[in-house]
Amino acid sequence: MSGEICVVAEVVRGELTEQTFVSLAAGRKLAGALGCRLAAVMLGADVAPLAAALGAADRVLAVEHPLLADFNPEAALLAAESAVRAAGARACIFCHTASGMDLACGVAHRLGAPVVACCRDFTAADGQARYVAVTCGGKIIVEGTLPGPVCVVTVMPGVLRAEQGRSDRTPPVERISPPAGMESVRTKFRGWIDPPAGDVDISRQNILVSVGRGIQKKENIALAERLAAALGGVVTGSRPIIDQGWLPPTRLVGKSGKQVRPRLYLAVGISGAPEHMEGVPAAELMIGINTDARAPIFDAAHYGATCDAVQLMPALAAALGK
Amino acid sequence: MNIVVPIKFVPDPVEDLQIDPSSGLLDRSFLRLIPSELDEHALEQALILKERHGGTVTVVACDTGDVDETLFTALARGADRAVKITGDDFQQGIGSRRMAAIIHAAISGEPCDLVLTGTQALDDMDGFVGALLAERMGVPYIGYVTKVEIAGNKAAVRKEYPGGLNAEIETALPAVLGIQAAEKPPRYVVTAKVMEAMKSRRIDEKPGEDPGEPFTFPDLRMALPEPARRAEMLDGSPAQVAQKIVALLRERGLVG
Image (tube, rainbow over all chains, first blue to last red; front, side, top):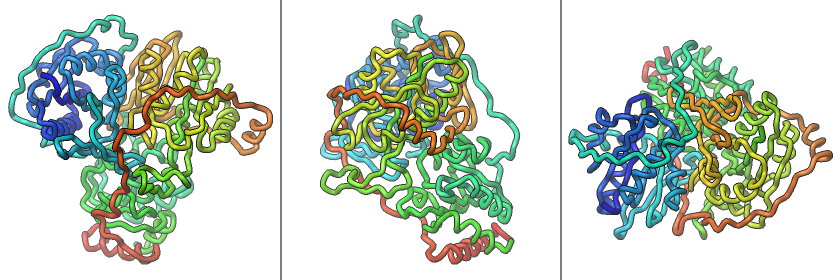
């Protein structure tokens, strides 16, 4: 059927990711806005065990091949392209994640279609679909008419509830022959590497003092350490802090790091970019400190203050009387 | 091993961003542009590979932001060649799609076994430069890379997944890799060395070839998010805010 919305499912280590269901929820909204059907695209060596969970879609288009058992970017790109072509997709949704981002641009280029990255919602107006996306770390909202006749979008993690992309219905599964060219793929999946053990497990901590770019320099980690000690918690950080080597990777909160669910999340000098907020799905109390009153952290935090992180940390440690 | 590192300039995330009400786009009149942080990691990874395996590192950037300083800094850090792509409208912003086309035209014919670039950049809206460039070159692309090992005509890379999980993927060269983080933080180079590079080294210039790729979508409009849609704001000096936070923590039994 022509004009479908295709959502490319993401499988990591044999499991459908939570984000797949968020993307299906987004796909459902987009299909509703355009009055068309929704297909899930599933790639794997044997899709049967997982495809049944994709009932939020009207059908599942599956490509099966041994090279698709684990994520092989080049093989997955060939397979995704052939499935999306077979569907005659109006729009193709990829998760804005490690594997989805590897595929979205390749499929778009091969279809001659534009990419709308970092979408967080879709709406309908005058019979046309519109996208709402974010850029500049969530500091800017971008809106417009979904480009056509075909386009590719990436959907940010966690922007809709995954439950909205789940269904008890069992979808019909249609298998597509693997495309020509799978035999000459130049990349090879070699294996999974488990996360290293050691250090404190930040996902089990009740109190986290989490620092971002706003602490300005490495020496100020000591201020965060003193504050965390006064609170009886530990120091974590956002991506730039870990990439600069100011804190070890075990302390990373966010997309590439750990998800945390502390009682207190004190975000100091963190802007609250979507990649970071993905790592804090829940906190009993979240307080954000950032000099920019428009920083997205204040959308997530319960309380906020626009004072300087470097001044606030010692002031708070002093106020705690320690 | 000849490595090419394209560098994208993005709005400085610490600056206040403003929207031009007439165009509905980012107001670029006072915008400070800086090299994308992940591209700096890509350069570091390229320099590490050069130290290990020999070869050359070529840095390519469009003429925008403080491009000369950025390219001389790259030379001072250890890059062998710097290429500035000239054109008169780059200050208005370069979409990822257009940048991939311009970079592709600029490096066609250059020896290139590997392109390293940031997995994404802060201002990406229409795709990611590395993945789009790989398509134009007709070579494999792997993103979210945090480690690269070269053996003969192959690269074994570590690709990062959430929660500290990694995958090891091998690819034949040439290839494009989207770097998420270099094995080490980008090296620091003292100003004196950059000044020295400015005196003793040169930047090659190439005119940008207009690929005819559109920069934005037809009716794209930007807006700043509403401030503090959820958080209740605590006012006052740092000491006053600290007192208010302590009161909140005590109320909830989070501190004794």
